[in-house]
Length: 190
Image 1 (tube, rainbow, N blue to C red):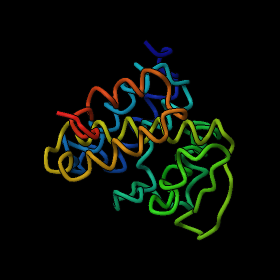
Image 2: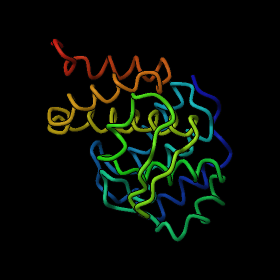
Image 3: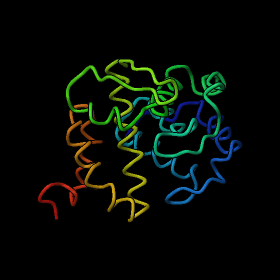
Image 4: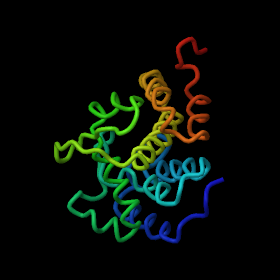
């Protein structure tokens, strides 16, 4: 299992709840339910505490696939005070990722150029940050697909291809979870 929960979690969870995550519908219940499940997956995969905290807060600024946000990017300092600078930077990187531009670049080796959907700028994150974002992406998508059959059928094949192509960026437990849950979408899968 992953490392013990950081002391910052209770405050972060309360903040997310106060900002509406416990009232926002999401596949499998509420957004807060989803955030907890993502965090549990990351913990089970052995992700470091900052990555787990980023997973807990990954939707705070909205994402390229989830329009709602719990706080604006002008309030990054608020989240940084709650979860720390490294975890907040990962939340921002995840939220700012222009998936149409970045996902095709994954699996072509490092470094990976990122397109920031908020600023329109291109940048090259550190390899550890790219790995963290792909790991959070896997936990997020696996949870969403587990709770929404329609989305699973529509996006399962593309997600299998994304994670198979990006296998070297995933931890072994994350890759195993991807193959287990998405095997039916693999070429020749059943």
